[in-house]
Image (cartoon, rainbow, N blue to C red; front, side):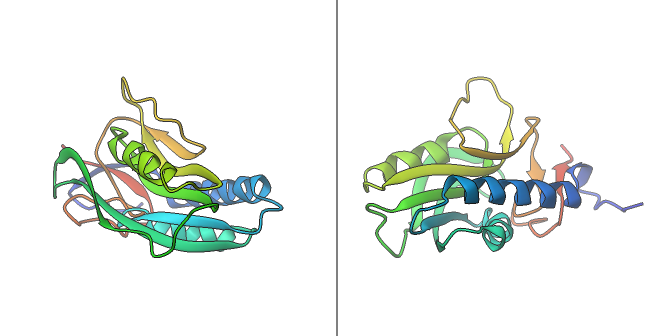
Amino acid sequence: MLSLHPDLDRILIPTNTIQTRVAELAEQISVDYQGVDHIHVVGILKGAFIFMADLTRQLRVPHIVDFMALSSYGKTTTSGAVRILMDLREPVEEQHVLLVEDILDTGHTINYLLHNLEGRCPASLKTCILVRKIREGVNTPVDYLGFDIPDVWVVGYGLDFAEKHRTLPYIAELKR
């Protein structure tokens, strides 16, 4: 039996379930982008780096990897305001862009990103989200979704709480 860290309540999504779903997402993305020259995969730091690494290693279509860093959270709370800390290195005009994000919580970050990147005139713009919290009033469209989860604070597989627990191989609920 796996011994959980005292900060954690329970494992929501075990490692093997995550790996299976990441492979399914990579397959669907590969099918959907079959025949395009390449896709521009944009990971949102820091949370998406593990998910994006696993996902892109399984893609069967040519792709370029880039990153953006945004801030909408303090160390332990959400502020609601979104700002770009690190922008893309290359322009995405006329590129097929796939945004890879760790979590859809309030929708503020992904909506900000979609609005910002749509203004850069990509050929297409889609989202791939690892987990989406089930919440009232949040109806941001997601093109590729890993998992729906309850409205609880989660850590692991890139997700953190005050920079802790980010590298766990599973997704767990943090104790209240």
